[in-house]
Image 1 (spheres, one colour):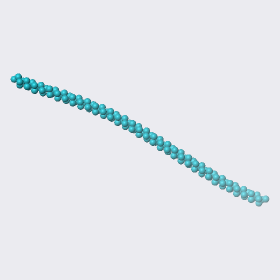
Image 2 (tube, rainbow, N blue to C red):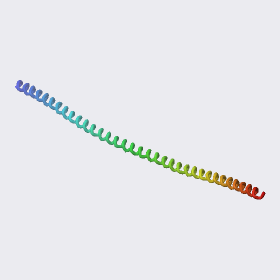
Image 3 (spheres, rainbow, N blue to C red):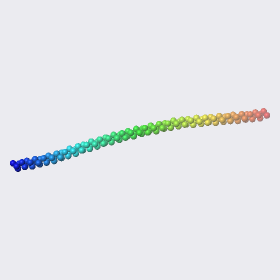
Length: 126
């Protein structure tokens, strides 16, 4: 009977060790699987965040380029308008100067002709 109890105790001890070993292996496998799942989820989340950040960066870059283009176009339009106004002013001044010069020339020509006529009259009457 004592022998049987020792055998049962030894058998029980072996069974407990086997179950303990299986439990450790099973826990280790579950833990590894959970770590793999979390790693996979984490990698997918990082990819999603990176894609979102890349998209946001591209959107901001596009908006900045559009804003820059708008500012440059506005400045260019102002320069064009200013240039048109400057050309009109120069044209007006040149026309005024030409008219003034022509008037002076006509006055000088009239005076010269009058002198010639006066000179001819004087010669003819003498």
